[in-house]
Image 1 (cartoon, rainbow, N blue to C red):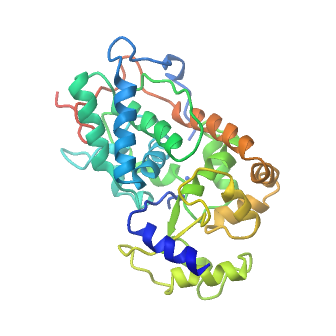
Image 2: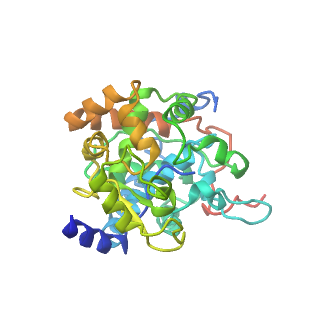
Length: 332
């Protein structure tokens, strides 16, 4: 355990956070208008350029791959996969990034690098929303996950959805029933939701979001030895939000998207309330057990879930716009 902690401390200097933030009845409008290779004529190298950029960034900053996966979740859970998440505060727009649900998110500046490379090849053609989706797809492969054929053709929102972020993105201490209902409202079934939570395999959790399970008394559902480890990672009940105080869900393969997460939560080593409930709730437990025993089954379901998530209520055709700069709505 000590050796793992030392390794984790090194990773913490460079890591990212993929955790349930402080997780909608929307129709599937536009989903049918998405298509594979949407840019084959208008920008044939678009997906290749995005993959090149994602790969280069991964080799420089490994945590970017985790960021792209979390971006997809945060963008698509809030009304639409429309890159509203990327808008910064300016000209009457208040960024979704200011929400408490965005705590721990980072690397937005590198999305701008990807967009700039695509703009150089094909100005005002490829949407930021598709960059969010495709960068997540390519990141999944770099993290050891499956290759997913993803449709494109999304357009970008002209507004931030900050006002509804906290209503739509589940909190780290929400019940599993509430989390399931949030996902079901955008068409993601229980099995797919369990698979999506497997993304915690490559995530880490800030102490701020788990000290309630450690102080003043340890949550009795936590494995005692693991609780001791977590208290060493989080030695105070009042952690500094700006400090590098984290624990990883997976100490064995922390940057590999695999089924280790499910084995850990079955051993009562989940970090968040939702992790613990996922393993014990009768609705989700059978899926957890199957994913824990079969990595191939987990990856198949994860692929299906990512496609469902990435096709949530997209803006298409004449809706929205293609932003020139992902941070700002185009001027009129």
